[in-house]
Length: 114
Length: 113
Image (cartoon, rainbow over all chains, first blue to last red; front, side):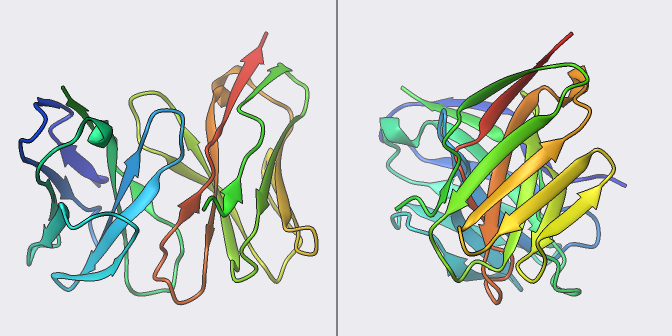
């Protein structure tokens, strides 16, 4: 049973560019959340997708947007990249049924903005 | 506003001894707490959790204690093993938030032989 997968593993972009990160949730999971982990900090919640809609959002600017597809996979888009966007981006999935709080995380995408 | 705090960035412990990791929170609405473990180049993996209606939960070598009045929880690992060397994150959630997690900054644990 494949867990949460993310692509690409690493990415280097220039300030001002746009980037798209991808995530496939664990089999049987229909909810996808994205987190940003800056160096030396814990993951910070960006937003969550369920039924192809953004259900809730953390304290991130509109430059951060996302999408969920009918197969539950998801994309995170960041526009007008800033140096401060350099971080590890983690995707987490969970099932909507059962009321579990547990999130299953992927290995992350390391984004470097130069 | 950091609502979940892990004030010890690192912990070194000898193999076989007890590791104690601490976590404090400020939001009294949190009703579920989780500990995650993270190795380099991997995503965080779930370790153990506790509901706010309990004060202790045990799973093998791992025990989590919750003191609601002090808004404090701790993770005990006994005995510590070299494979336990990792970063440990404390996380908290509010009922009805669909599993949205707020994390602490993490504690790097190094278990020495």
